[in-house]
Picture: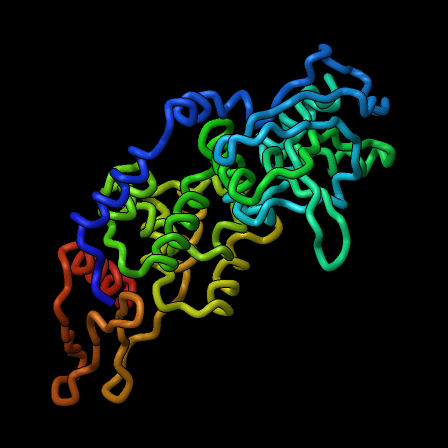
Length: 346
């Protein structure tokens, strides 16, 4: 599919921006405080106390401009669902995550001073509370319930919040309140790129409001498999530099083999950084005993699926070996020399 021309893309984006009213711009600037409004009646330090449903306030929606009445309610966090456009990957939320630990401790000691923002939705014929802003608070509340079964999650329920407003508000949470990890941002960008195959990286950068070089790096980071990220305390622990090296290390490797390699180094512990994980994987690779090549069985040195070099025994000269090298970079050449040294145990 042909890429969309940048001229037409810029004209379209310019037209969309020019149609924004002055009021919309002002609302967008205030979204951080509006997205998850505080109780107006002061802090409530009783975590188990029932919040009066009379506590209400109005919130102007950022897109439709509707005035929506918000009502404070207490709900079971395990019965909530998360807005599908929330970029934070919920399966990677863990109690061992330092940020989750701090949030849980804060709620336990001070109570949940900031209710999450939510709305009612229908899921498989049942009415559910959909969390728009506050997925980590919901997760922390569920952890608290393990010790305090009566604990409830406080939510601002907005009846009639439209889909477009809900999508905008969940996006605002990720961007302005507590930024999601680089890897989760990368996964989001990859998703946008896949949905818009005619967009160039420049168009994607304009759409997301970031530098083109950043988009390029994020898309590389998005190639790190979920299996690898799951061995870290949090997606925040995945650094760009070591992330790129992990992508290269596992290029072309199938999921079962990835799991096998990770099991050898991860055991039951989670890594605090991707640098530490990468170091452990390299050390494990270095431990492998490599047999010397024979005349009939050459040793292949690969980068992903591509063969970079072959080492075989010379049939005519005893004790002599032959190395065939194929179009390697300087870095790959250095790695090749290291591999040869390991093979012959020098």
